[in-house]
Image (cartoon, rainbow, N blue to C red; front, side, top):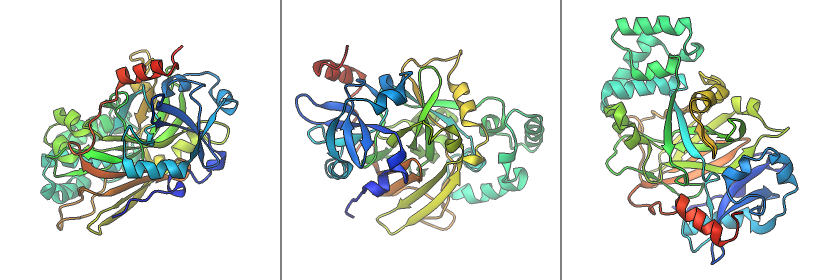
Length: 393
């Protein structure tokens, strides 16, 4: 199937009023990772403003600096999308990168009732998808399907916890879902994330896996949320279901973290209130004709996004280069694909589209982690590249 990706599928519906920043790879002897701003459907080089996205987002005068930044036109976004689709992350050709660089990529887990129930199912089935449907019915019969109304850490949550313990159904996932402490884990190291238009990676030994469409908060070193993007927290349900201690194997593989298409900065037109009400859509289209569509609203999250930031960052933990924080998945795909009752799992070649009206569309194709290009351009390579281009003061 021919890969296609347009401006309209990539940019927010109100792109003309959005402050969108990102990163691209400019090939050539003096090329490398380059900061860009999106204006009128074209990309503009703003590397004179900051050498890295982490440095740019740490500025106190971010919005003002961006509006008056010297910039160099790099051509239409459509041309960059076409090159990305044709060549992938080939350093000899221009392509889009993930918009983040030196920020650590963190993720909050079990923040939505639907995904919390699915995590309990993974644990109860020990990662066996053939048992998922029966266990799902048992769990929902006992705990209900409206856990979103319960405030984590509240007296009502403690009462429910006691009931679940009596029923021998208490789970580590319910502990972080309705308990006082949020689950925060490291999704990917700095520089490992992929952007839109390229292949994401699944561990080749996984047979039960799924995309996790999420809103990603962009957090400055001061702990201030300065923008948002979309993310795909690629997940291996079978690995995590066998043991929570396999979370790293389930979550952090080559190409398993996609962020983009751009960072939308907060301004007088878009802020945390808009994030709280964002509706995120998911579409999976397979070469086998399978189509899955779904959506969910951030309004159903059990912990406020700003509360999640305090669980990840504060007096107990600092990130001097800032942080990207996945807010948790709102949609756990369970539509049968290969057999009745077997639920959903990826096939190689799946096109995954994660979209929101005011954040745009993040589009990736599914491959195995050992078949996509290995991650080789890390922090050390970035510093050498920037020094060679004279961008480090």
